Amino acid sequence: MSEESESDIVRLEVDGKEVILVGTAHVSQESVETVRRIISQENPDVVCVELDEQRYKVLKDKKWWQSLDLKEVFRKGQAPFLIANLILSSYQRRLGMETGVKPGSELAEAAAVAEKSDIAVELIDRQIRTTLLRAWRKTGFWKKVNLAAELMASVLPGGGGEGAVEMTEEELRKLREGDTLSVMLEEMGKTLPSIKEVLVDERDFYMSTGIRRAKGDKVVAVVGAAHVPGMTRHLKAAEPIDQQHFDEISVVPEKSFLSRALPWLVPFIVAVLFAVGFVYGDTEKVKNAAVAWVLANGILSALGTILAFGHPMTVIAAFIAAPLTSLNPTIGAGYVTGIVQAWLHPPKVRDMEQLSEELVSWKGWWTNRMARVLLVFLFSSIGSSIGTVVAFKWLKDLV
Image 1 (cartoon, rainbow, N blue to C red):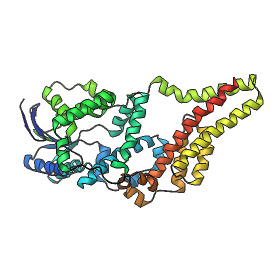
Image 2 (cartoon, helix red, strand yellow):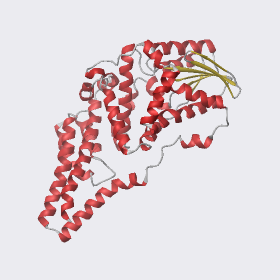
Image 3 (cartoon, rainbow, N blue to C red):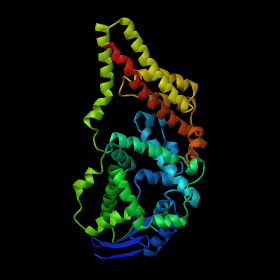
Image 4 (cartoon, rainbow, N blue to C red):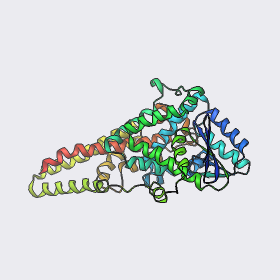
């Protein structure tokens, strides 16, 4: 096995094939040009790119939103995933505004150049949904709170105003340098080790395995520069592919028993408290507790909907639905409010076409109809959850 390095490019001999790793920054014009040049010069048998099928479709199909069914998104519980994905995309797009490059352009360019030259394209990254859910479920409660706060904070443009995150091509070039990335990853490992493990380490192994399985004697692999050090280690090791580990990191881990039981525990406790209140308590106290349950859930969920600038009828729907959905683990208040908001104030073609551009500022989340539907879902759900906790203060007085 031999190795040759130049700038952001690493050349390796792996399993009898030549592998050329091209480390990129996802919002860099220099990376786009480098990818185009390397593929043209090397004329490989296959080009591997750091994409899964879903992200590749979004990059390639500018009308991806036409197939988006909001009702299905809410019904399948995919709204939180969609929100997180949009937050990450909006942050990358703000980085790209300074350099004028759309996030992921170098990946799309790699696939386009390969296809134009009749070179096979391999999508070697793990499904984004699997990655995000693995990160979420492997993170403790307080770390989840920190992660959610950091995600939301990333939406706010630098300096508290609108506009792009200032990052020049020179700064992006420095960011791609291995030493800088190593320091960043070490810091991430200290603060959120489970997140780094899932977002970086697991994907390093996953994509390295995809490269080793790619057919052909010469492979060009285009990946984010953060993955180059880890992938280089895996590829240089040249050990037999660990299929068991590959299978383990390819699936979403099961929810813990507590996570599965908790949604059913709340309605069970409420039912028991009301039953005890009827048997041993004052009927008037039971009525007051029932009113408190309705008001706490309804008002706070409605307040969340108002903060999201929901339609007045959606606010009413939140007030009515929250006390009921809090007792039904199979459906949440956000599902109801999201559907109602989308029906009363449906996103227009313009909202979908300009979604990623408008989400680079706080204002865009409220003015874009599509984003507002998601905010209504999120804020009404949070309000209902807080209302449930508040309502227990009155319910416990029944016994």
